[in-house]
Image 1: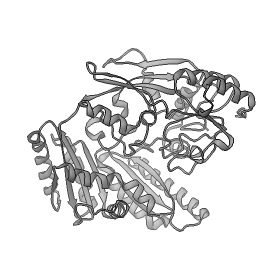
Image 2: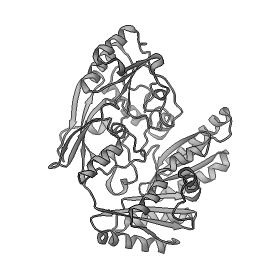
Image 3: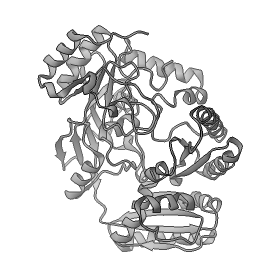
Image 4: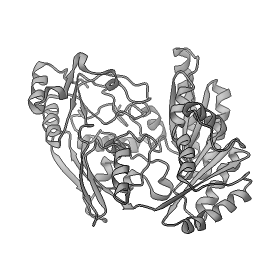
Length: 467
């Protein structure tokens, strides 16, 4: 399918909509950062970047693009890892980072209405200062809430609280033909026909452009305590997780990590990890309204871990200790990236009781394929982040070994009844693996949904399930 190349008339129209010339970039004005996202290796420049500030501007631009068959790519902070915000057909890129306003905090209904460009770290600070809590907690805090919604981001607190989808009550969306529509709202329950809001969540900007979101909030827990639990082997650590989940105590987070990744993190942030006596660790967090309440929860979990062979249970009950542990955990991605020349990643999700099988397989795969693979992840929800490192391989050899590694990892995930992505999405980079992992009938249904929303296929083409 061919798309119109932007000409002077198109740029003049965009300029007439926006008014402010500084918010329209084209040609040499387009910074290299707009050609790619954080990691995927997918690169393509848009012909114009429009720094939009309202749903009305987006509506007029999409209406014009739909009529003239110009490709349009929505983009937030560009922190994605699968090429979902890369302009594969060039065209117009809608940069939503200036749409970063807090619109309404409704304390009676426990909702917060925001624009899509609000950063996750800004959102967390805003609500916590006012005694509220937005639980989704993806690792990249400089991502926008619009990007989080578009990928249904998860994060470490998903074990107890769920993922982004569980905290989106309503959306304002501009459809590919320019119509502004509203899905959901402030209501807690809704059985009024198909839930189109949930189709938009996780659609990676292929069905519509999010311009407002009504988010569900909770009262802010007043206390949090972490447990750092060293195990002799990763197998013992991972096999303890289902027992923890089955217990009456529900941790906020259950993370797993290996010593080699911790070493990378120590070097990256320049600080020693609080413990160095083991090759594998579980990191658990508990929250609540009092120390006594939390202690009741973690006492039983600590006992389970010790029964399963844990070397120790280290209780981190001060902000300083918590910060030291979680800062190291938060640095894992950048630390691994800094340890090699280039890398790609898979965020495979498998049933919780299969995480160890998946990790052990990636270990064996290193020798078989001849690449280094480092991993960590969310043991509590079965989400494994595996990073394949290029090191000193030539480009040709890297592409060959990367492709083989990915194929084998995703095949193993299918064997374990897992899925291609737990939280990063599919974008452009992971399309072939999604196609292999799902029945053709399901891919056909996805394409039918895309066709219903965007019959001219102008919005973020070549992403998720498109040929």
